[in-house]
Image (cartoon, rainbow, N blue to C red; front, side, top):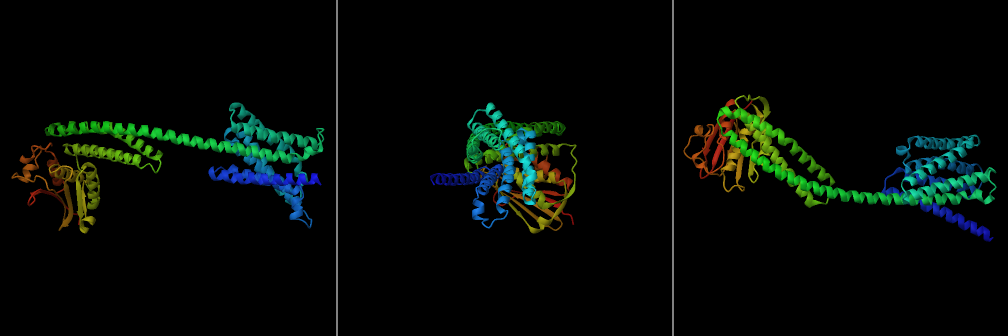
Length: 494
């Protein structure tokens, strides 16, 4: 009686332990989405089902009227355990990546297990079952061999638990088969010890996976820490590059503006100079922008202060690129060799592109845009880049000659009248004196009241040239009270 009670307690503890190990695999899967956790849970379930049938519990609870149900359950579970065991071990030991030839055998064992399940229900299991012993023995031996190699290369807790799990499984299998087939003179209870070996094996294997999961989390935290340090260093480096290139680009801009003040004979050399500047700075600015984007990807979503710093750096780079592109285009348009390329283009498209560039260039200006419905659908035959630069020049003049600098307001009104499109720029600046508009539009000519403001005097001449080649008009007039009004008029496509 006492022996039966002890056996029942041991069996209940065994099934309870296996159930707990099965549930643990789902917890592991929740934190680490690896398929072998689910497959290992299926292996534990298959082994539990095998003993559930072999102990007669299934016949007692589910197949009390006899039949082949209990036999099907026991045999099919054994083959299913082979399939699940082969796949889970291959995944845990990462055989496909590290030992592809060994992984092929494990896939063969998994297929053999699946075929075995079908043979059970086809009634031919007694012929196919002869294959099970050798396949399982080779599989277990290979798994133990890989565990020995891993432990020899890296003596850590994970590899030690793997070695213990697979070594114990291999020893239990050898002892059970040796006693069962009469190879070893072992007591009869050894044949039933495989159940204890199985639960210890799964416990050790689960411990190994727990260590693996802990190591992965520690590695992830360390990677996050190192990424944050690298991001901080990269940000400081990027900010330094932005400041350095800003100073260099500002110096280059001053050089360019000085070069533009020379006579028409020197303009071709100016174009070549600006092209060299563009090629020199476009690549480092692109590198800076790429580094800023990489830093942004490494920052946590909640790191608002650092993301704001990156946004300011992005805006600075965009402003530098726009300054570079506008000045390069300006130098090309001022050259005598430039030939405009006309195309059918929407007025709204030109205006929207111009406004975006102007807002990057004119830091501190309040630019108000108004566009009528007719203007939004109007189209002109124009060199879009040339018109864009002409409008930007007028906006720059409006900003430059307005006071106080940094808090000025500029208006851009776009409207249509008869067969013409009008782009009118208004400001509240120093206005015009008595010089005629034709005089002010001359090359390198500046107004009498603008001597105290830096500039080359070529901006209006470029605007005049642009309107002339488009068959349009440039109108300059003083506003009532204070400020200047400049209008570019272009013929519409009818």
